[in-house]
Image (cartoon, rainbow, N blue to C red; front, side, top):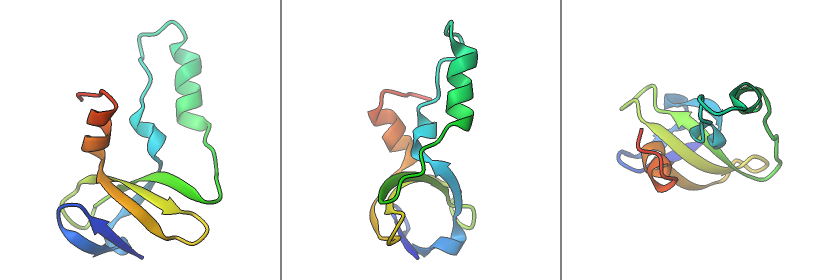
Length: 95
């Protein structure tokens, strides 16, 4: 599988490590009243969709960047690749 890295161009997926659902970017507030319940859901509960899914990938064998890859889990076709820092920034996260 080839991943179109936004900065480095086409890279083989063997350079990357799959890290799970991209919703991990939306880390809950640890100071909230319901932090224990929220963090349990955040850490352990995941959907397992067949079809289009946004995933986190780490470019371990390259520039060590984090990517959000939109991929069809049935066909493995990749429709979009974004830098995770850009996705987080668009969602209002500064860190």
